[in-house]
Image: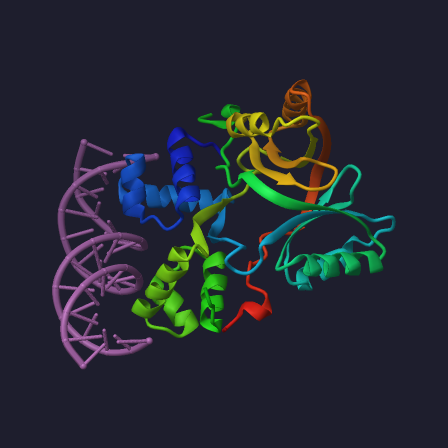
Length: 153
Length: 153
DNA sequence: GCTGAAAGAATGCAACT
DNA sequence: AGTTGCATTCTTTCAGC
């Protein structure tokens, strides 16, 4: 997949506001509605655009505490961890990683007791956990764009 | 803000597909288009829905490597780190956290050299870094919903 | 919360640059 | 790879209930 500067504008605009009409999007990137519609369709088909989602704030939903949990797994218990994560309310992401941890888990919970409960379950499953509570997020959701060498060719 | 089961359905559907028409969304949650439009507007005004964004895959964009960098800051260099993160291509998120690290940074880069370059700059700024390269993400983008005790009252 | 009509937008398809 | 113009259908919006 080769991306030209117009594609980048499209990606930037749609990451900022996924509900733009094709007409308005075309206006912003200097293309007619049919042309921009076709480009968006191609970006979707190429797997560059995976979908569109509402950005939801955890705090007003009653989940004021966000944390990253570093999980160490001495055995091969990843599958168990994943099944647990899918079911457990408040677990948002699981990343299998290199380094000191096997996995990094992101959670959003209603209070520290809920976090404690999750950690308790992890420990009981035999995982070693290190918890990092998020105090603030000075940078979030920066637009994802290709490195320069990917553009236009 | 009090949320009833219909609001939860709306949040679930819009997190899944932010480009649903209000008509189709209304169909899915058993409400007329004007009614669902009004509810969505209230969720936006209440800050529950922050916006709508395209989900973009980093790999086809030429950024196949995702990593979390744990940053330790002996001094009070957070502002410097944030300014750096805003400018540096590939840095997606910065979270200030409790625990062993001052910050957790999420990056998506084109190759290990680019990751190495970012780490080099961080170290040169006086930060101590631990890097976790993401091998896979077995769980991502689980829908964010309120804990049970937040519903309906 | 609903309906219903008017205005606007999306889609598909021409013919053309 | 793009444009305009047009027809059809869907969506939004606003009134009135």
